[in-house]
Image 1 (cartoon, one colour):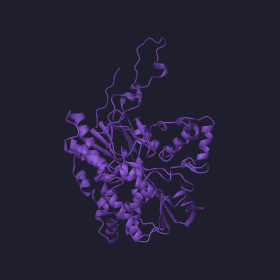
Image 2 (cartoon, one colour; image 1 turned 90 degrees about the vertical axis):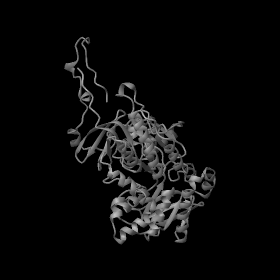
Image 3 (cartoon, rainbow, N blue to C red; image 1 turned 60 degrees about the horizontal axis):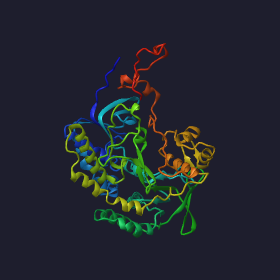
Image 4 (tube, one colour; image 1 turned 30 degrees about the horizontal axis):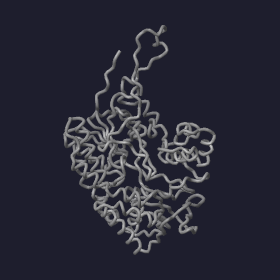
Length: 502
């Protein structure tokens, strides 16, 4: 008995429609390849260019004020989005959640109450990055938000914060957001940075000519904030949020002194790291990025990933590539440049061509040249120290660091055992917010060295309604073969059919 594998639905499936995903899709489509783009958001742009089309069409004074505050770097995505929209060869599917990815190019999708599978000869993961999780006392209180969440409300909801606003953390995004709020007429009560002048001095040895422009931008932001009278401190430590039903005040240590400020909105940011939920669930090899205290996919320069699944669980070679900030944090320019490189590599794989051009690879290197300076100038701060026992680590299951330490000390000393016993990482976020802290706690308690372990990824990556699962489309008929007790030969000598394992 044999069954034929389903035919591919497209030459390439791209997951994510930010700068790298759009750049890759346009490159592939213009080369005559069929492309399916799956994206959770309602419009192209990703986080960097979120709602750009709608905001460009808003001619009201408030809309024009917002565009001016978001700056030219935000509007720089206009041409790319227009080119993406103009490509008829791109099958763009917005508001579509990806809940499974397999190394052989099979992708599980969900749109409303409809779900199914599509298959690509190649798959490109362009799903972007996330803000580094920062568990600290009070971080789950209403009124504590990340910088990225505030930017989303600005760009997509046209909602401006009010009241006593404190920004705390490190990184260019924190400075950019503080400057954007100032341009919108909102004066933060405090900009508290965990980085210090000494970090920037040590980082100066990494400066290259191509990295001077971002440095000049950052100095301009700081200068404008100082002229506006925004209070700023550096070397902030031991941040805590306080309040009953919502945040009412914040406390922190700087210069050896403990301070407390009234606060209505605490905006935190501790840097950006690649989102590894899809690569991890797809079984791709990950590597630990020590300076950034985060994982990232282990790939070739053109983004090809390596599957960790054993041969008996693989239906063929790994056809997954990773691009943009999902591979290495670099911002819009680097994401666009690498999206083109990944697309050229895919065309080589499909057409046996020459591969990415030297110019394309050099463009990636140029865009990423500032990264060593930024990594050294803005080291992890809020997440640098492990949380105390009373601090919640897994907000889905309301587990504290003390809960996890107790489980580890009682013998649950690998990540999957810890998850199974405590349910850490089994909530809606599937470990996106808690896995790195749990791994660091495990390493600390066991005095283990090397790369911190991850939970073993498995689908669904994101919650899927049971009703959608019951009516899945695009199933591989080979995956439906199951041997029952009646099918098994009594003497064990008859021929059987083995279905490929999923």
